[in-house]
Each structure stands twice: as structure tokens, then as C-alpha cells.
Image 1 (cartoon, helix red, strand yellow):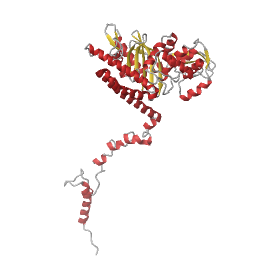
Image 2 (image 1 turned 60 degrees about the vertical axis):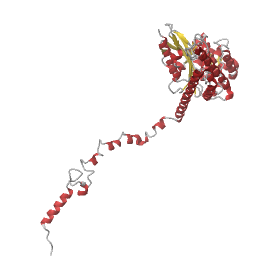
Image 3 (image 1 turned 180 degrees about the horizontal axis):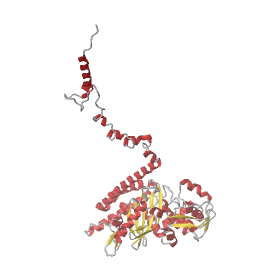
Image 4 (image 1 turned 120 degrees about the vertical axis):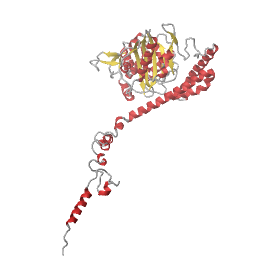
Length: 473
């Protein structure tokens, strides 16, 4: 006998199913248990629930992975993962490392020299023996020369300077003033530099005005262009690599060795391969081209043309080595006792060195020649047409190109000769007129290259601007 279904059973079953699918208003039931435990459903992804909202547009986690946001945007298609690696070449990384090492070495040198100066001021002449070896290590680190390459002579110079400071200190203590002298004369301001009366009759300390110890260049000297008096200095007797500042002596020696600046010479073919291989800067003359000595001198000073230097050397002495010997003789004649040149171009050689003091002495002497001064202060020079250059060509001063605006407070920068090698850093020998007086400033060793910020010209403008502010009426 077939059992008939009780109508009340179907009603109870239907009611039970409705209760099962009934959705609570929140994640928890009345008794505190989770809704999913009571109903058997996952409440996390239902509309209005917190779990689903976490993944809806506009919420944090989803936005992090949307187009253009940090994690997805950073690695999309691999475009930005190696952006720094692609942007910075190996050469650039090495250049930055060398600049950082140079900067750290300069900071270490300055700390050592400052400590030595304090020792001299406190102990007087008795401190010379103590700091002698410290400064010798500083020089060795700077120039990279061995003990047999002239280092002993440099030590003697420094030792003599320290002894002079010690004597000055002893003299100062006699009058009870406590002021430190330099052991030279009464015009000293205590730092081995000159003090000069201004228009109001008060003394001006150029050492305090110029603040050479704040420059990017570790070696610097400020000189009165008319008298040759040193006004301020920083590591002025420390050997350094002069780079293309060498070419000032090349020009001076050539000018004094030829009978006429209008003499014509042919650019030799055989010199170009080596110059290109060494990466030397060129003025633009081509092999076989006819040029006058005057044109070559402009090419030496303004664009720093190495082919002009070698051509002049061959014209005068038949070879670069013989001409460099003549240059060294001229340097000794001028009193450049800490200078020894190996090339006439300034290309790097461990035995090719000078000091900013010697370079300043050279420039002060050279400016007495009207021909040199005219070349040195020119912004550009145009060469007449030749067979190789039917329309002629023009070259420009590397200093004025790097400098931009030559004006400074109370005057302007009149001319200059730049220099750069990787070992020498950025160098500059410049002439400026400030408030009616001409000054020579030589700086060397600034970090950087032709592709970086021109710290050598920045240093020059900073010093001349300070002088202009301090000496204006």
C-alpha cells in the first residue's frame, strides 16, 4: 500500500529550505556565531560585505595593481626595472666613483692640513718636525709620485714654510698681541697672505674675503696682476697636474723664440694619429694646411689645440722633447722652482707637474706681453680661408664657453686658460678686473669633467664676486 504524503510535511520542508537560504543583515547571527556557520554559505563575497569591498574599484589593494600604480607600473613589460642601469653607463659609474674618491681624499687632506696649521700656531717652530711627515703623506697622495720623483724637494718647501710660520708666531708673542704672523713682513695678515687698505683706510684681509678654503678646487692662489703680490692662497705650493694650463708656457716660449708672429708654417701630417689616439683637444687645423704662428698661438690658448702646440715645437726645435727642454729652462728662469714639464700639450704624465703658485707667476709674467694679453683675453678667433677651409673657420675660448656670463660684482672676467685631464681635474688660470684692479686667480683639482658642472669657473666667479662686494666704494 503506497504511503500518501502528508501535506504538512511538504510545508515544513519548504519552510526549512527558506530558513536555510535566508540571508542575515550582518556577518554574525543573533547568538554570536558566524552567519556562514549557521547558513552554510560564504558571506565574504556578498554585496555590501566588507570582504568584497576590499576588491572593488577604488579600494587600496586593487588600486595597487591597476595600470600606472606602483607595483604593476614599476615592472610592467620590464620597462622600468633596469631604468637606472640603462641610464648610467659603466663609464659614468666609474667617473662618479673616481670623483667620490677624489672628494674624500680632498676632505682628508684638508683635515690633515688644518690639524698641522693648528699645531704650528700652538707649538710654533717645535711643531715642524711633527707635521712634516703628515704633509709629506698628503703631497704623495695628491700627486701620486714616488719618493724618488722630487718629493724631497717639496717637503723642503713645506718645512721652510712651517718654520717661517713658527718664527712669525714667536715674533707675535713678543708684543703680547697673540696674533699669528707668517715670518715674512708686516703686510701679512697671519695666513701668509697680504692685507691691503681699502678706500676708507682700513685693512682688508683678502684671505678672509676670498675664502679659498671653501672652493671646490683644493689648490688655489689669488694674486695682484700688476705687482705679482700674493693676496690669498690655499695649498699653493702643493704639486699638482696642470693639464692644459701648460699651454700658457708653450705660447710664451714660442712667442719669444720666433722672429715674427706672421711667419707661416705647414701643419705636419705625422702628428695627427698620435694626438687622436690620446684624445687630445684640437683647434681644427688640418694636416698640410698653411697657418701663421699668430693663428697657431690663438689655437693654443682659446680652443686648447694640441696640433698647434706640436707644430710650434717642431718649427722651433724640430721635436717636442727639445722644445719642452726649452720650456723647462724658461720656467726656471721665471722662478717656477716646483715645475717640471714633459709635454708641451699638458697631456698626463706622472713627471709632468707644477703648483698653482708657479702657474700664477707664469701668467703674471705672460700678461706683460701685449700680444699674449690680446690672445688670452679674446673670446674667439677667425682663421682666414685656406685650401682645406675655403670659407675659413672660427674657434672659441673654452673658458668663456664654460663661463657663460663673464660679469662679476664690480667688473668682469677678462680671460682665462682652462685645463682638464682625469688625473688633474678641472683647472683654470684666469684674469679679472674688479673695481678698477686686476687680479689673477689660479685653481686646480676641482672634481668633474667636460660633461659635468664647471666647478672651476664657478669657483672663479665666487672669488671675484666676493672681492667685488668687499672692495666696492
